[in-house]
Figure (cartoon, rainbow, N blue to C red):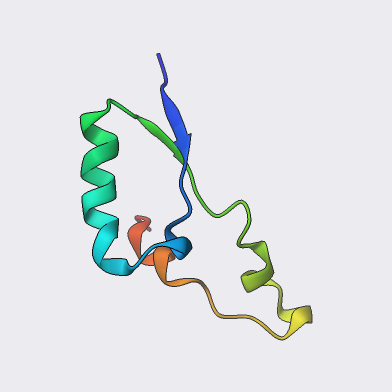
Length: 60
């Protein structure tokens, strides 16, 4: 069974990201939606082609 949450790391200081991930794990959250509102940062037509800092959290 999946237990998920939306998470917006761009709203929090980078220093909190690890703590927040630990809190989600402690709450047995095993599915996290991130980036659904950050598409504007990936749109070169809007002169914003840099990826948000939280993208470094994702494995490649």
